[in-house]
Length: 154
Image (cartoon, rainbow, N blue to C red):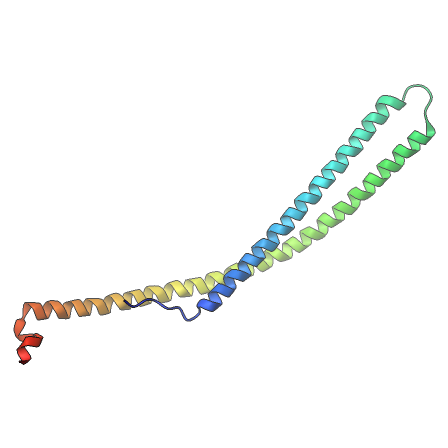
């Protein structure tokens, strides 16, 4: 039995691999952004805990200048880390936008070749069915009229 053969199958497979690669890149960037957002949330929680501890323990009586200064350095360091993480998130978001654009382009290119394959497959199927019907019609004609069959040539 004849089977459909798509001449651009290698191109279709290459475009599918490119689309999959772009999807992985987008997923990795999204995971990176989520990791950085979690780190930022942890920093904010650490700042909140540090501020709460400072308020709870050191606002009554004599103020320890060294502890107060250490607390301010801690807050400044955490805020600096938060700023760096925020900048990294912004950079990843820019890369994500580019990666999503590449993914969109790759998906369109893949779908274009896939639709071409589907059209060619449907056309081949119709042609194959038409030829099969012609063959069946010929057989039924020969069975209905034995004088037209192969035995009539004897």
